[in-house]
Length: 269
Image (cartoon, rainbow, N blue to C red):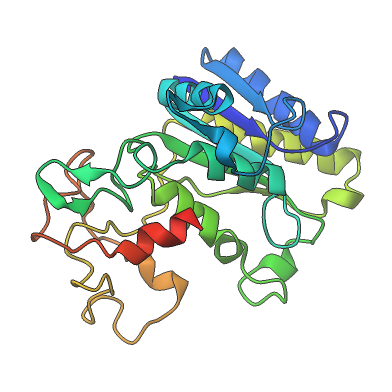
């Protein structure tokens, strides 16, 4: 398996740097091929500007990252949780690399008025694993914790970016209390990262709902008979026992769903 590891931490000697090395060593030992995009070491430009777009196409640094992404069967995205989100340099990687026509805005050849997104698209089938460290202990990032449940804190990345562009998203790997971890805690964290990356090819993805299989109405609102009475982020996960389309079959649902331009405008802002 080809694995692209996206790393966003400014300190090579940090806990994140050590866990990255553990994960990559595990992948290599298991026979996988790994490419690393170390964004701070690369001095990655995080802002979109006119230099990104030339008459002959995208800038060379964007093309290089897209080539890595096209090569990859799986992507690991690793970062520290800063202010409930990813570091700006990583957000800038997504802003600049996930451009329209490559990662989104892809038309369905079977139904040209419909976009391939939320489970479909050019990146469909590329598994995505998020590895995140947090200064918060686990409980405050739990179901009733004051910091919010971690999978909901990460929803914009897991669902709104990775799943939106078609990638099956694996449950995230979280290392809690990262600013006070001791030797025993490090050994546990390293073992967890190694275990999860070793299983990157066989872990069951999060059961997010596909856009084009009939779960959503013409306004892209979840149909009332699904998750009745529910609201919020959790309703976009399919319930236990729900049948899931086979790879490549997601767009063969119950017909055309309009493609509101506002969704693409949101992605471009």
